[in-house]
Amino acid sequence: MDAVTAQKYKHRLVAERDALLAQIDAQRGGPISRADAASEALDKSEDDNAQIQSGRDVAFAINEHETAELLDIEAALLRIKEGVYGLCVDCGTHIPALRLDAAPHTQRCVTCQTSFEQAHPV
Image (cartoon, rainbow, N blue to C red):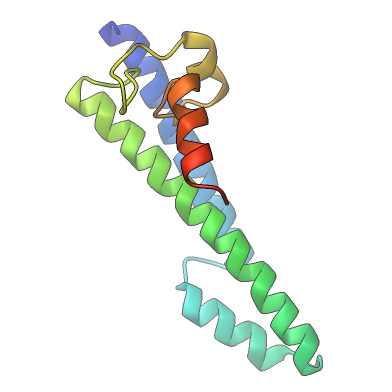
């Protein structure tokens, strides 16, 4: 991948990371830790235990998804820095531009991603 194209993806990834971090801050009421946000939510809650647990489970799932997305973005930025962005981490083939445009943090070609998902079902 040429340097100009890599920079295009880098700018997009940085913008996505910044937007995700801003979204997380807004959801938490500012840049506070996950534990502090959970504690504040529980302190203000007048719900019964089932509602509290359900809310906690949903918040945990959202948090895990956001954390995974941030890790994927950081990994993609590192691949750009190392000069291997756009290459499948499993087989080394070039990932098509259409796939990178759709998901710039992707790390595998379609064939390897399919194999990975089959080996690691959710």
